Image 1 (cartoon, rainbow, N blue to C red):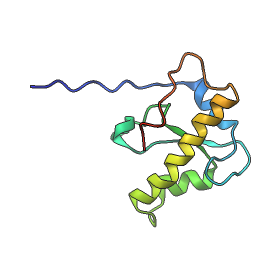
Image 2 (cartoon, rainbow, N blue to C red):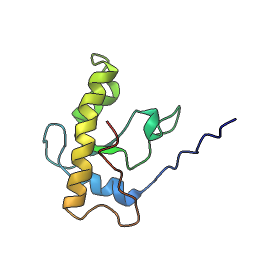
Image 3 (spheres, rainbow, N blue to C red):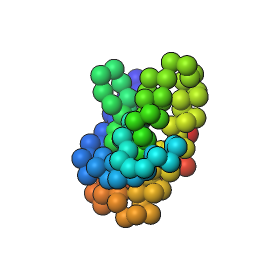
Image 4 (tube, rainbow, N blue to C red):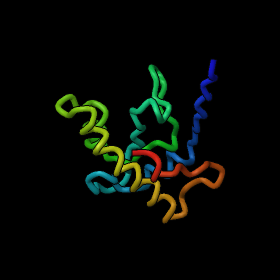
Length: 112
């Protein structure tokens, strides 16, 4: 029997606070943004548990609600909105020097 590797969660108040300083990476609304966690199991999302904090996009309240509770959007459509916003969030935090030094940077090329 093959063992399944345990998912390693990152919880970082510093990272979440840095995300709040960014404009919405979906529509461009001015900061503060909500930290919008991924809804994908591959990112650690499970029943009653949020994805790891490295899988968070900076989104305004309207965009965050649309992606989390957008019943008029398919799962694929919500993912197509969240993923580029997450990629932009990671790049912008790195560009601004706001990514916490003790938190590993996800490889945004390997997650779609």
